[in-house]
Length: 499
Image 1: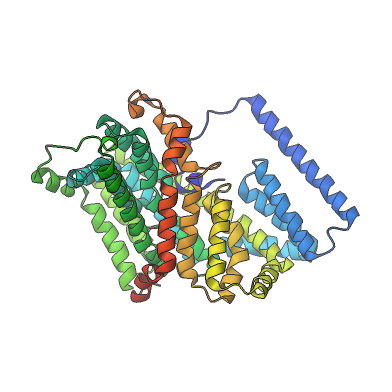
Image 2: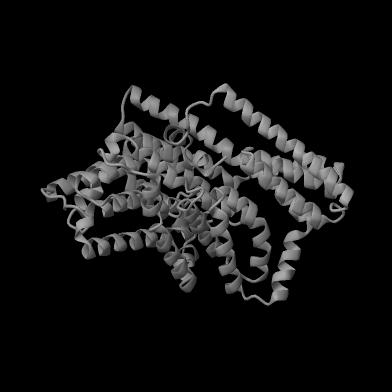
């Protein structure tokens, strides 16, 4: 299960899923899975005979290898985590502990009031996407930013920020912006790499600017209040938008040939009309964030307000059968995405219980403290580890597997977990740009194969990867700024009343 499916399952299906596999391919995959499970069973027997399952640490290590093996065999990540976690619980605690875990953990990990924001924020984002908000925000941004060097690329990035504040879906934003932005920039004479890079980077603020599913999931794992964690992502998200826009403008000034032609003929009347078509969405976001900051309502209540507001906006934008179609699609997509998220959380809870029983996180904390690492040194080391792991794992899996080990040490070193959560999300976003996973790269490449999008130009996977790599140093720059100036993350939740 990947984050793409979690965030916007219908978009993921439409944009990146291959055609239904023929029966032969399915049977081959089943044989591969069966072979892998038999290999794991044989491996367990060998390990038992060799005496390598005698200690808790050895069991934990075997379970992690089992988890990675199952993931490599394309077993759904939630299932892989559940199987490996339960195996470890059984080996360490016995049958009674495993039975108690099966009874307690699914309910305790999913029946959390703080996580109730997830289905409502997903519903809000899907509704606004179905209402046609994408094209309206893009048109308004283009009308107001046409005078800038690289104006259409800047427009793409600003439209991505606007959609981030409406949906919180990196994949959804990239999907929507790619279909509009790429042909517009190619038509205006933009260099292909700048056009591809700008649409990829437009989706990066999607998990920082609220509503953000990754920040909500992180708050649940770290046992933090959701409201302040959402507020903590606002300034870093806007900072990322500013850094990307500044880079585009500088590149357009230094190399005018890559930025195409400026849009002409846009009047002040056009600008005000474009604002009139999008004003309900900024108003809705202002109400949500203002209510969170002022303590008028909790994160859950903010999500409810956002869902109702999105429903009203959708009813105003689309009528008749289109409205009911949009509503039905949003509901079904919300059910699928929410089920996926909670299934992952339940699977992760078994791994977390196994690690707790093995005492590995506490041993890791003692080891780090024995090395004499400062809090800053450990944070930098954690960032490097997260970025490297993010090259091979989707964001939610990365968080669910790494945070149970890192959080106890971070707490012992006195690191602000609210601040660290924003760094974790940015690291996870970097993983969506880099090979071999590079979810955003494969998504944009798939979309760019349409002649309506590429306008007859050849768009190879290599060219999309080279364009996406421009976003890596920019995100690393933002991480550096947040480390040097941590108040950029903490001042807004500290000054607000969100709970």
